[in-house]
Image (cartoon, rainbow, N blue to C red; front, top):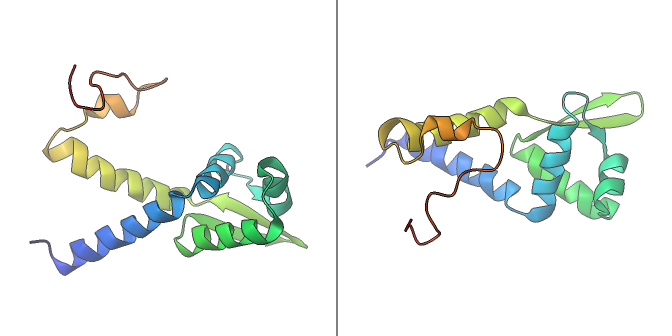
Length: 126
């Protein structure tokens, strides 16, 4: 059985995955990563994705609450950026679970450029 700290960490990552699990929020994260490190103002995100302002605000708040997005003020503008530190934590968590102990995924498969190779079908057969 895991320790309390391990359980809390898993819950925190599950919440972050859930925040990114909605299609609009994942698209927002993609945009913010493409615009890194400058980031984007909400109006640019709204224009790119065609999301109503109130809905976009809800999505950005969810991402900010899970520490996936940072907000900085410059004059009258609020700039949104992907929190790459949190994303690195998530990747490190996944890497530790799948690549160091069980070797479920080979580390070299995570850093290849291009689409992942398909050694197995969805049913786990070659």
